[in-house]
Length: 309
Image 1 (tube, rainbow, N blue to C red):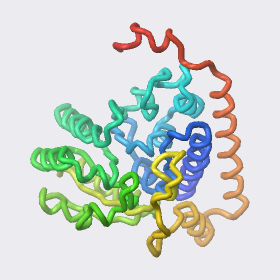
Image 2 (image 1 turned 90 degrees about the horizontal axis):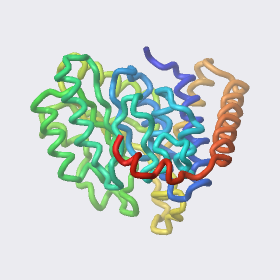
Image 3 (image 1 turned 135 degrees about the vertical axis):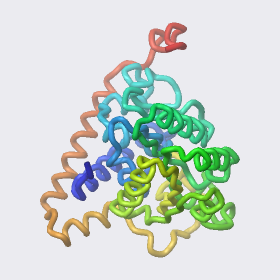
Image 4 (image 1 turned 180 degrees about the vertical axis):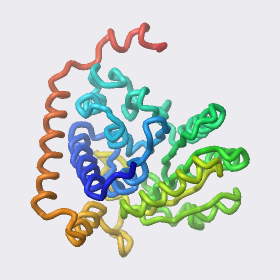
């Protein structure tokens, strides 16, 4: 089932409001602001039986779209035992039953191999399930990116590699480490490469939807490069003093873009959009307040009995 344009907008609003609240609670949280369209558009139409491997800035809105509870996710950022990760580090991980690829370390790119393995498992099961794997433009320069995409291409695995090109690898601007568009690499693996405006949620939804359909048919992986822009620093407390005023021309706020489109088409009026904003702020405020009131993770959650699950 394809998510409606209004629901796409609603999820982007939830993502931004929740993200800002979590950055305020924990300056080590990694902000998603500016990349909401790429994330929501990419994962909106996945089936429950598909596997999601979102980038580390993205997972909470993906988990919410797949059925997670917001207050438990917020608890993770505050190191509370009630979170899905029971207060452990790497709070990006959500409930496993939602079929997502977890982060196992702070090292970027580790999910590429796990996601490719998940796609291999889907193929072995002879299901029509697909894995969507998100990663950043800096991560695309890792060796395991090439190894995994090459393997997936050779075996025609049901996976979509989604590069979220936000212009930065921590404090390094992309022009210093990317000699050519990432999407051009697809030809080297003999798979389709698709460049899409990562600020346009409907364009991302369409591009990923086509790639997912191709993977379900057994035609193998697709590499998608979604161009967006990282509005804030690498993490919530990063003041980004290394940045100059170099925001590219034509960068559009994804929420403003979709809101304008909905109004122009008559699919919503300003009152509906205002209500979506109000509801998101109320939902996030309630979840954050509930998480704040919970106790920190203790020995019960972090003890030896919880090391092996």
